[in-house]
Length: 307
Picture: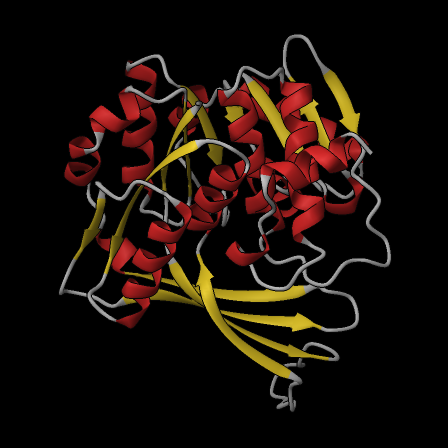
């Protein structure tokens, strides 16, 4: 079975749903509230695990009820927790998610909490896990120096790297050459390339910027428009699965894509095949509420791919 190591964050998702998102200074009465597991890295770990990979997760939790929620999740999903650290110094993070009931669109505030205390030394301790994986994946919910060092370790051992630059913040130019696969969404690509990214054509232009900076393969996710893939062999817009009328919540769709994408890469799929798996994973996830709980199984992904 393919093995993936993921460095990222667990946060508790506090999801509020209403028939529209509030305006500045406005208070709305919502329709529902739910508390559940989230965080980009954690969601990606669940998505990759359900898609069929063996998954090891590296993170820092507090010692509080949210941390226990995370540990219970990883035990239930079969995710290895050797390098899930805990600290007394700070509580586990949380995310405030506001969801429009009519469209499934969302706005999110994330506080990483204890994950901000992850250090380069913590990542070094996890080097054996990184070195023995087919794919290593990380994102920008962890401190930038920790993210960069983790990618350097993976490259040192010849492990395929997937960097999901989310949420987008300025990153050193030296990071780009560490990326076998670079997977921003449209808003992250726009911020990092300093270009508009609202169409496949604009995504292609942004992808060329990242390629010039040293990325081997760029995969820009475009929501319901699919994704744009650019490397030495492929320069192509790949459409999404049509889920019109079935969308419940788009929160976590990018994490679903990345988890499914990484699992497929680890199994030896081409980038086009892996992007198709990622798209199917994301397409199913948006038809369900929540983030980690919405991630589909390998059987569900295969059924959509074959439909």
